[in-house]
Image (cartoon, rainbow over all chains, first blue to last red):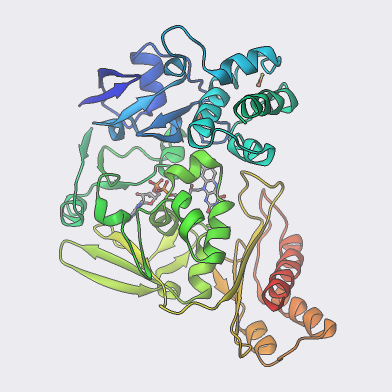
Amino acid sequence: MIVSFIVNGEGVTARVTTPVSLLDVLRDQLELPGSKSACEQGECGSCSVLLDGALVCACLVMAVDAEGSTVRTVEGIASEGTLHPVQVAMHEAGAVQCGFCTPGIVVAAADLFDRDPTPTTDQIKEAVAGNICRCTGYGAIVRALESVAGERR
Amino acid sequence: MDTQYPKTIDEAVSALSDGATPLAGGTDLMVEVNFGHRRPDHVVALRRVDELAEWDGSTIGAGVTWRRIELEGPKALAEAARTVGSPQIRNAGTIGGNVATASPAGDGLPFLAAVDASIEVRSATGSRSIQWDEFFLGVKKTALEADELVTGVDLPEDLPERQAFGKVGVRNAMVIATVCCVVTRELDGLTRVALGSVAPTPMRARQSEEMISAVARPSESDLAEFARLVAAEVSPITDHRSTAEYRRHAAGVLARRLLGRCLR
Ligand SMILES: Cc1cc2nc3c(=O)[nH]c(=O)nc-3n(C[C@H](O)[C@H](O)[C@H](O)COP(=O)(O)OP(=O)(O)OC[C@H]3O[C@@H](n4cnc5c(N)ncnc54)[C@H](O)[C@@H]3O)c2cc1C
Ligand code: FES
Ligand code: FES
């Protein structure tokens, strides 16, 4: 069947014949490989996207369920060539090592700051609790996000 | 592959009578699909059924997400919701999916057992309300027929003011319970103790309830006896998450701690 939805502001269609995930469709059919595929069981958050405004794991969204929905991926976080403040802060704080977790963290953090421009450190930690990073030990990530909150206070 | 996108419960149950698999948040179903354990070729996507997301007083619609329960639920259920998975999982996962999956570790289930909730189900031919202990039949086994949809969970109108949920796991975030527990206590002492992950289904520790309900102001030794009774009543197994012995011990410690919170 054909599934139609909006990704990062553009209408797209995908052909799906099996219960594949939205993640597979984004990466394999729509040329959006920013969302990473690692665990495929909702544990790591590297596939985080916004589905109708809600932060979810794209690996757990059945592609057919995206029909008629609005999806925002990490490719849609920067606007018109300007990085999102979260991306700038992550870069400056050295919060990226291998980078595999980074897209998911950027999407989760952008979602947090959309809902609350000045989160506390605990709120920051909770917001990225579903995103596993095997490299940084999280310190630099949390510091980066604290700096975004600090600038907005 | 065939997918239905019903907008009403009536449309959803008619798709079920054609053999479709219900899909809510997908946080249980898609894990099984991704691992090749299930491959539904006819799916009824429930996300667009507004009726299922209704929360009408004491009836919580099956499509209500953990995120919403975390913010709006009765105290111990909200506490349970806060421990489900991660923000991503709570935004997608629903109470109806938790109930239909019927995992022994389902964090929403001890609350339903503690307050004697009923599960509301509907098929194309009618609806019924099933008391929790007749709904959960075994590990991932329920009284739900293939053509039946869980429409919601029905809680009593008056819930005990003192209620607490707790969970023991290997870490604080993103963890499936080694043991989870709800304790409620009324002003007259009536106490309920429900546990998850220590039996094939959520269970009540009825002897422990009886013992502690009769004590108006439990002493340290009453509390110790209560913990011992809870540990004796559960019937856990050893699996990849923990040992039966540890679960038994943790069940007693956790129930005692939660009772302490209710007594404060
Ligand atoms: C990373 C991760 C962490 C998790 N952590 C926890 C946790 O801490 N605690 C916990 O309890 N659970 C946890 N879960 C499990 C899961 O998130 C919950 O059980 C959730 O409530 C399932 O709801 P859902 O809407 O996603 O269900 P789905 O996956 O959409 O459906 C689950 C099952 O129920 C059926 N179903 C769904 N809705 C209905 C309905 N209305 N009527 C009839 N059948 C229906 C489906 O066909 C399927 O078989 C976790 C899952 C993941 C992936
Ligand atoms: S790939 Fe989706 S959470 Fe890991
Ligand atoms: S930077 Fe390597 S996993 Fe996070």
